[in-house]
Length: 94
Image (cartoon, rainbow, N blue to C red):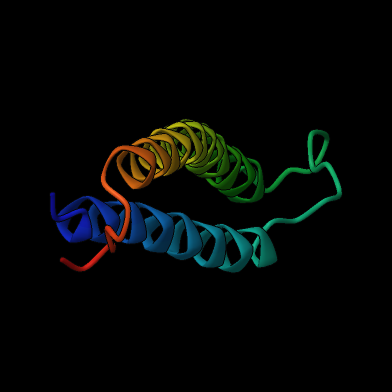
């Protein structure tokens, strides 16, 4: 059995997590950590809310994709281990 397509899918999932991590870091750089609740400039408050909402979405997707990637990787390792036990000499690529 060729496990390379399954390994490529796992690598793509891991790459998406890294991209989300970089995007979150860039987004968090724009975040203003001081509260502007009493400030007369409403644009600062709305900007804070927008960035906070974006960070929440990125965090949620990051957590979901991390769990999926870890579970998928563990299952892939179990399949590889089982196939290596049943068919000695199996490789990932062919």
